[in-house]
Image (cartoon, rainbow, N blue to C red; front, side, top):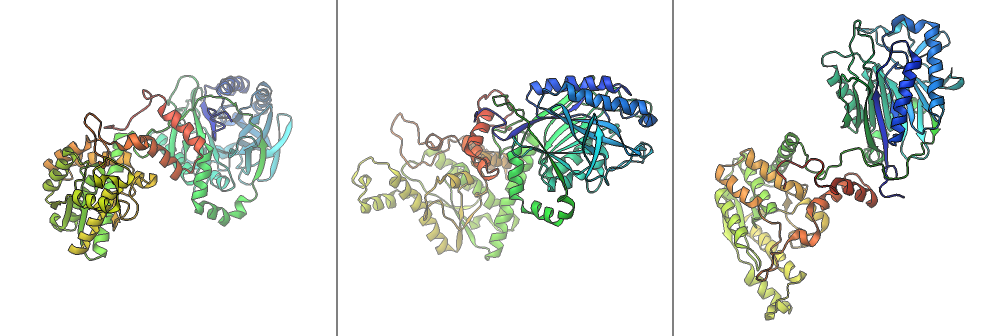
Length: 607
């Protein structure tokens, strides 16, 4: 496997295209499709969709019932198939096709020199500016059918899936325009039947507000179906006698917009993105109700027909056409980050409130080091007390300096405790730690400068031991301060150590989000101004356990120097826990996210 190949890493490149058409000129429109297809094939695109009725034009009215136009459309499809026989890109083009005594509005699937299937539009709008039933028959009753097109008899119906045998997880379904506007779209049944790449080829004349509706429907479909959703609308060249067109194209994936093109373009436009087929599979594995829904609707989903195709994707490095967040727990968008912080902080506060109510309103016992985690746990506790109408003095906070505690962190801890008006004490653990190390026969007990893991854990363990005994003595619970990143890495002292508490408010907060939460608390004025000043000082502090004394001229102990940057640790953590990816894919994504620090966006306020 080529490590740098996006296809080998579970991605597939897709394109939603719009292009200028000439009304009632299928041959010229076919040539335009072929030109686009060749460009897209050179870019490694596996699938390209084009707008509804793009070969004939959408707004040609009664010409849809004229033999010359229908014959020319059939010739145009044969022309496209022949001209793209050497390409591996799957093409979906819109065309009116005659079958029996009716004409159908269709999405025609072309691959490797042949028409391989035709999906008729199931639902025909006949309201407002639409009157499609004048010309077309609905295709919802055409399951299991075939049609003669471009010299071949091929599968015909809304029940067609196109499965790539050499790109795992790539299963295509085609619906047409209005199909996505009905309460139960064909694509939803197709997704339950196994489709992962849902497409909508659309005419969709533009009116004020319709673009927002399209986004809403496409996003919703991709989110509920746990699928990719491609959308392409008609644009330049369509008749403007009584309609107008914006040529909108976009690609969604599981509710997230991957890319969209400029609207009202002059010339061809396309939205090209690499969809993550592994993500779609993993999301469906996790959401068991997706399969439950499939079983409920088995009578509708079991009859889908599968057409197998070989995409023969490029094997080498073609780049990655999608944004990979450097900080998956921290949005780049400032407004989104603020909302996430608001929700995360209030989740913590409300959770602690309920726990305190449920166990009889005990006091809260907490160790405060002056670092990020204990600082945030303390301000969560303070806000919970405010909401419970309890005095903050019911928080019993302890700063417990050890052998490597710096004056800076200690002074920050004291300043924060005082500014919040909590009950606080200083409890020096050095005498007890020295006594324990001596009793154990540790070299430090006899004066040697041996700062091993035992030396560190004795300090961490004593701090927790003191807090538990104090909580027992004074009627309180120990509030844990450790965060998600530390727990996932095992960067804590197990047992009677910072791994243990009565209630841990930070266990769902990754380290990379912690500083942004505190910064949000300051910027949103959750506390008095003087509290905000102390919090700002704490934000500038190096992340350190402060357990090993630094010799003169040496830098203080640094957590990230020992375990690696939290930015990369949290990146890996997200893709392991949330996505379930293989190590090779996580490494591939990390390379794309981090190899060029000058490219892409960074979260507001970083670092």
